[in-house]
Length: 370
Image 1 (cartoon, helix red, strand yellow):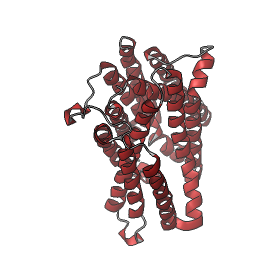
Image 2 (tube, helix red, strand yellow):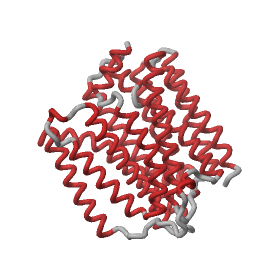
Image 3 (tube, helix red, strand yellow):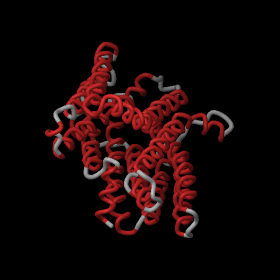
Image 4 (cartoon, rainbow, N blue to C red):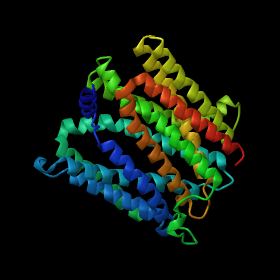
């Protein structure tokens, strides 16, 4: 069974690349947050773009050079670049929105977070189209050129001192001293660990091995899910306001109750599969409900970290928080493969539900911090 899981997951571009990607994400967010406060967010943003261009060009070499260590190195650099840009963009929003306009801050954070994930899903289809038109080498060169143009525009338009702390932080300050941010970061770790615990390895392998879906069907389904997930993230402020019959800025209680709802949904999916209800119906309907509620959880958390972060040196707090996010994804990815091989998809769902319960329990601490 283990060999079969490895072969199927490799068909989706898995193997050891995802853990390496997240390991570098943990380090990058910690160090990147510090660099952003020291040298400015424009510098970390541009550094991320340059590294991503370099990672793409590493893949444009002759095919005989595309060994596993070479491709893993390119993937690691891509992970560093992604996290530098994400941390920079999330931190910059706090600089651009006045502190007394928290409703606007929530909307812009949700739009940024949601559009990023929706475009990630679109990227699956765009990548397929580029491969069809230009092949692998032509596709990575095209992307490298496009990002180089964006980098040049960024050099011209971004403010040089954006996000630079007035008081230069020491490297020892990369770990947050804020109780609220520490609690929120721990909650984020378990929340994203719970998602990836069944979504990253277990779900695609189950759809292929147990339900007989081919790689095209599985990849397209998951890409559509990610696009929908991103759209709901962007719409989270409107959804929350509609549910509350008016403008409502999320706080610690919102993080708590939405986490509880997500835990109930995850446990319900696991229970339905345990009771031998039709797996296709349960998984497709359950996954979309789970995705919608998780997207709102994610948007609330993304807003709270930007709101909680201190004005001077915002990137230190944001970087620490997204370090916890990357750590959660790393733990979830590793557990997803291990738990699935040991006990199957239902076990992954139950462990995921337990992670979300822990996230909800930790969120109680936010009630006393806000």
